[in-house]
Length: 327
Image 1: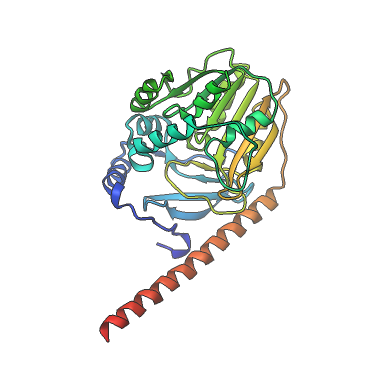
Image 2 (image 1 turned 135 degrees about the vertical axis):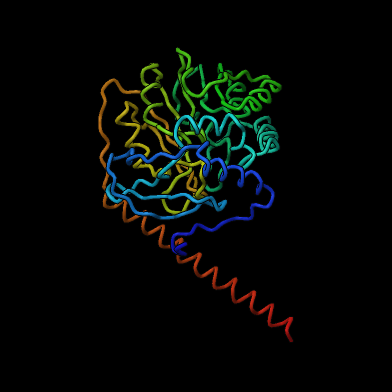
C-alpha cells in the first residue's frame, strides 16, 4: 500500500472481531459496494486521498478534483447500509451502549448557556439553536440513537420526537421516557417546526434524497451538525460517506430549498453546525471550486507530512530501545 495514501490505523484490539466480521460481509457481498458520482457537482474527476480507514478497513477516500468535495467511493449501497445500522454492527465497532449511558447523564445535567466554540460540547448545538432566536415548538430528530439529544429540548418545554434504526437503542430510549419511531427517514411527521440531523448526515447514502423529502414536508427549520473538513484532517471511517466543508454542505442544502441563517464551527475538531430555513424559491449556492480544492490538498499534505515524521520518530525510538537492550 502506498504510504502516502495510508490513513493511520488505531488500536482495534477491543473491536477486532467486529471489524473482521465487517470485512467478511464486504468481501462476500452481503454488504454491497456501489460507485457514485460527486453529489456536490455531479462530476467523476477524482483524486485518491486514502486507501483505508482508521480501523484498517480497505476503502477509498476520494476528493473531487472539480469542486473539492471529499467522499467515500465506492460505498455501501442503500439497502446494505440499512442492514448495517439495523444489525447494530455499527454500534459494536463505533459506539457501545456505555457511550449512550454516559451521553444520557450529560443530557440530564444540561443547562442553557452561552455557546463556546473552543472545545467540542455534545450539547452545544442546543445553545447554537437557542441563540438563533427562531420560534419553534415541535422538534423531531432523524437518527436519534438513544434519545439523549432530545432531552434538553424537553427541558425547554418543546414537543419532541425522533426515529431510529437500532431496536436496541429505541428500547434504551424508551426506558428513559423518549418514544422513538422505528424507521429510517421515511416517517417524518407533519407539523414539525425544527428538524435535527446531528452526527447523521455524513452517514447517509443519498443526502439529497432526504433533503427533498424534508422539503416536501414543509418543515420550516433544519439543523445539520457534521464532522467538518475545514482546516484539519477528519477521522476517516467506513461509516462516514461524506466529509463536508461549509461550502459543500451549504451548496447541497441550498439547491434543495434550504438557506443557511446561522453557522458555527468548533475550533478543536472542526465540527460544523448550520441552521437552515426553508425557502419557497430554489436557488444555487456558488463557491470558489479552485480554492476549495487547494485548501483540501493543503490540509491533506500537512497531515501526510506530520504522520511521516511521526513514523520516523517511532522507528528511531524503537531502535534506540532495542539498542539499549542489546548492550
